Length: 178
Image 1: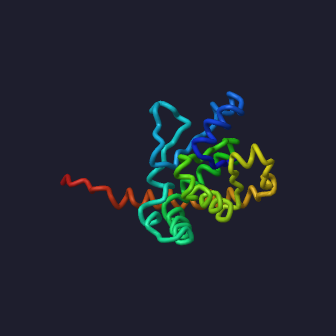
Image 2: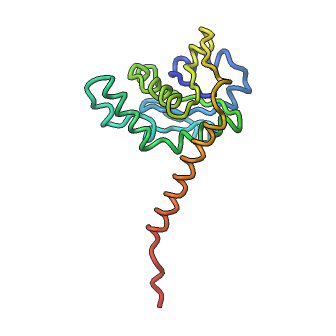
Image 3: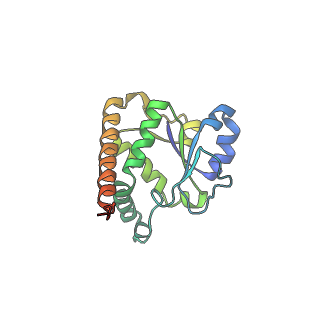
């Protein structure tokens, strides 16, 4: 499952309420400028400031509506292959993935926008962790179209792999030996 949360939810609810195995197996994606990874050897924590955190163009918009629109464009241009891989891992490997930011950054609403984007673009549910555990707020996790979501993810990943191969070929320097 995919979740969004801020750091206070993580420390006060997730670490307190969840079983050790769920905590140990959780995949944490830090989408924050203020949260740092302390132990570089932690395989289950990824810091993604450059890809999913709103860029300066998004943050410079005048209203939240303008920011929301610009953020969706940023996600479409920069994060689709990564999000496709994450969603595919959740479906195929039953990962629990948590997108996390600081409590202060939570007020910028970008993780809420990320949640909406994934739900709208991929048709895959994302949960606010606190709503999920406290209010019995459940989106219909079983009702998403698994085949359609996987097909969309695979198509995006395939296009990205092909683009990377083409870029690699264009960047290679021919051998100058005669």
